[in-house]
Length: 304
Image (cartoon, rainbow, N blue to C red; front, top):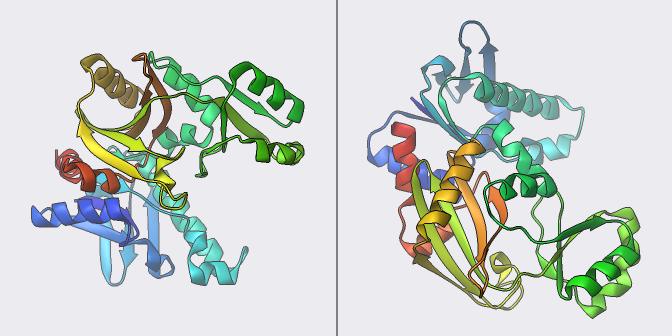
């Protein structure tokens, strides 16, 4: 039995679900929108067990051989958010998530991906230290609440970009002269500044042993938000040098991420920088552009 957990409208989990259904695989999809109608029990002995109940359907957790987990924050569901912290609804979805995440850590089933393996993405500086161990360069970085330190860093490196330190998505932006008047706000918000590295972006998806690489050409600093920034982005399938592909594969495996999205940039001099390892990549945007069957590869992994 393959267990899927997430939102039906989520592109990656919907794509994988569709592939599994086409292949006739036994699948239990837990619709996160119906968290208040979901009940779970977890038992821990020689091997973890328990059950899930939703809408008249039951899943015995001991029957699960593989799981693909892409849950969002259940506390943001409209009825839960309206009820607020401390309400019965809030406590119910919090307990449900605790049970399922605990099971995912204890089970011997294949889990794509365990929460413990995804946790380093919550601290970009910590993850950068992990990345360096695999031979990738990372940008010179300053994390500070001191405006003067930013100005000194800028004098050393010229063009800078700034972004979030945490795993919360932010728009990567170039530090421009008109932003300098806001540096005083740093005293209330530690911010990450990095040297701007020129080059061509690549997104690499690692699925088990498979490597899928996309080359990205964009007119903006953060290609994910090209439309919002009135820019253009082009994505095309590409092949990585064998040593770079192998480094990506080894890094994903060492970080216990059977599925990973790795952000690389190749400089004009041919050096490879790595900015991030995404432990729950939204691969469908890239798949739609390149034609790579990433959803098929994830289904293969779950079935294998």
